[in-house]
Structures are given as structure tokens and as C-alpha cells.
Image (tube, rainbow, N blue to C red; front, side):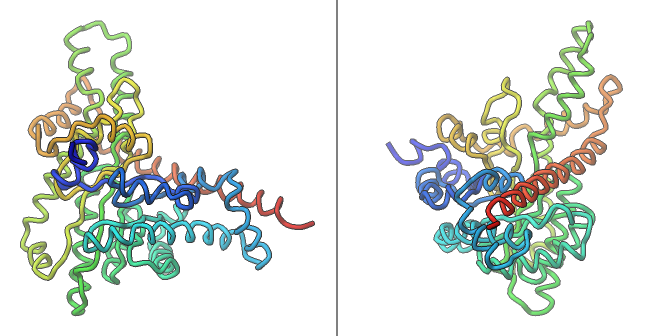
Length: 384
């Protein structure tokens, strides 16, 4: 039996051109050799992290205590201790994935780290922190995550123009994705205009999935409550668990339009890499849905899917790989349009705005919680 026959993850990568990244990072994962093993056995080609992941990794984990004590003795501030912990992990992960980075000529092998979520609405601070993170981590395969907010996109453009690879995160709406793609293009154009190399810069646009279905499904369930008309019930029920994937398929159609433009083709001729759509928030939250629905449903060339550990293992066990990103595109447009049906009347734009605000909050809260937890640990480890 061939390796790809044994592992659907490798089939997705080798036969369908989608890269599999993992949405997880901790020191245990690095020092145990597990990440290196996942690169080999699961085909993991990149890592994404976020404040929630670091809160889980650091909170209550004694593996970080020695470095925390060193920071205390060196007189470091709480924030400096925090950064020393996460920067060490990011560097270590980058080193493990450097071989992937080299083998793929810089297409994969990245480790993403997000600028502090507390500055999501501050363009100037985002630029400053992204630049500082990149310089201090000092690895060619680090990818800085910047939220795709109105304030974040100018920072994306600036960082790309400086040659820093960027993961544009927290994208929910197709319009926001399109704006992120053009921010990437403008950054490349500015860099090319200075006569600088644009062939070694990468970017992904992290398009979130499960959170959309959770929100929409909740609204649909409210409509279904006490509904006795079987025809209406069937029409509304048919939308459940379908909107996120439909939305993603439409985003991919926009991607195709963008890379077909003369502006993009001129950059491609200078060696520019496409900004790949990255499917994020791919862990299925509703147990009645397939645990790999956000993998199987969106396999396609020149994309990335970042999977939490449980989804990664589930996919290795029972994913059914096939190129589906352009299957049912007409149906996808119809599904999205059906939300405007007077009997449904769900404002998708408003939902996307709510999700963006909530998404930032979902990163700010664990960041604040982590800092409080770390502060408590610093106090407990500080000699009396």
C-alpha cells in the first residue's frame, strides 16, 4: 500500500495541491519530538498559533518554569517574560519546519505568530509590533499574523512592502478576503517599485469557517422553533451547516478572478507567490456534523487547511480526499442568496461584522487570562 493510500492527509497534499498545517503549538510538542514526527507521519507543512493556544500551552504547565525563573532573575518585565516564552517556542518550531521551508522553496514550512490582539484597532502599533516580532524571532519562515480589520490591512500592506511574510487572520466575509488580497498586491507592488525582490514573500488569508455555521445555525434554529409548516421547515433546515463552506467556495472564485488580473500577472512575472486562502476554524463544533466536513468539503489547489490536533487525527483516519473547492459553486451562490429570503431574512454582512468583533474578543480574553496567570506564576516563583 502506498503512503498516500494509508494517509488521506498526504493524498490531499500530493494529489490535490492543498497544504496541511496544524493549529497548535506548545513546548511539549516541540521537545518531545512530536512535531517533527507529525511532519513525517501526518504531512504537517506549517503551524498556526494564537493567544488562545498559548494560554492553553503555558497556563499551569511547569515546563516553562525554569525560563520564567531566569526571566525573574534577569529583572525582566511580565511582558518580556511572556515574549521570551513564546518567541522561544516559535523559533524552535521554525527550526523544525525549516527543512519543509527549504524543500518547498518557501511556499510552506511557516510558523505563524499573532501580534498582540489588544492592538487590533491600532495600525501604527500593529506595524511596529509586527516589525519587532519579525526582527526578534529572526527566522526566515516565521509568518506574522495580522487581523484583517480596516486598521490591520494597511499594516499588512506595509509589512509585505518590507518583505515580511504575513498571515491575514480573522477573515469571515468574502469582501474582507478580497480587501486582504489587494493589500497583499499593493504591498508587493510597492516593494517591486523599489527594485526589491518579491519572490521570497509569502502570505495566506485565513478564512474562518465553523464560527460562521455556529452563528447562522443558531439563527436558523430560532426560526425553526415552534414552526409547523413542513415546507418552511425543510427549506430552513436545508441551510444548516452549509453556509460556511458555501461562503468559502465563493471566496475561492474571487481568488481566481484576482490572480487572472493584469496587475497580478505582472507581479507573477517577477516571481510573486499567490496569497493562498487558508481555511481556519476547521474543528467541527456540532457533533451531528462530520468531524472532517471542513476538510473534505474544501480540498483544492493552492490552498491551505490548518487543523487542530483532533481534526488532524480524524482526517488521517477517515477523510475522503477529492477536489471539491469548485464543486457545487452555483449551489453555493444560491445558498448564500437564500439567506435574504423574506422567510429567513438573515443579514450575512451583519453576521460577519459580529463574528469579527467576537473573533478579536476570543483572542483578547485568553491573552488577558494568560497574562494574569503568568503574573501569578511569576509571583509564586519569585524568591521571598
